[in-house]
Length: 267
Image (cartoon, rainbow, N blue to C red; front, side, top):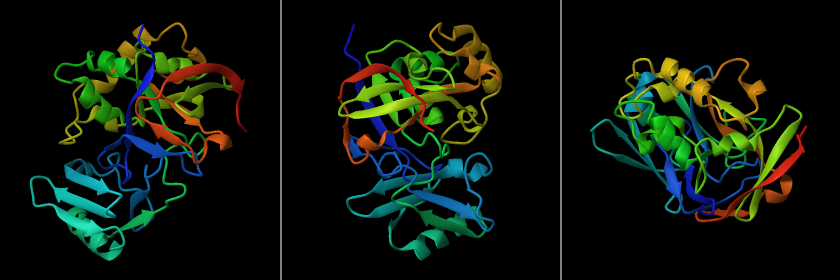
């Protein structure tokens, strides 16, 4: 069998907006990947503006260039607008015109704005899992499923649902080495409404959640810890903790991946 390797590293510089694939990255102090969810758009009440509560997010395209310090935004098929990252007023004015309401762009370079603030390390999924889950639906391929599920790390050379090996019971974690970095698998990621929508248009895929749950239940591998699914099977990908020793290290595409075994769960 092929050697398990890190196939893709993907960050999402603005929370809820488009992915940005990189060949290498460093691990932030909070345990996340550099530039991942570094920015977030919030409304007047401080709540995230995202695909869960704002359908127009799906019509917003974004490109991030960290070396140039630039963020480019485009509404649908309109003209792109490029901004210096320090031009917060300009970015917010553009976003307010797009959303039709007052918003603020927040930035946190050290900690970002992760969904899971406890297990704030990168999310992990097998390339074969994306292919298998895409096969549950007509007209969806693995690349689109990757955009729907929004993982950080995609691993090749492993079987479908390999990432279900990266968590154990609620008292333990599973150590995994990725290149020179070590992470601790925490739990299967609970999914929200976003995977059920076309990532380009925001249109809901009829019956997505029902079909997903049916197939996930039917194909749950024997190595998955079933206690995590007592509240339902709408879970996929592994959330991780990042040990302090990994902070500041570099992660590269092509790095070998190895499961090291169970460890005490961080407290």
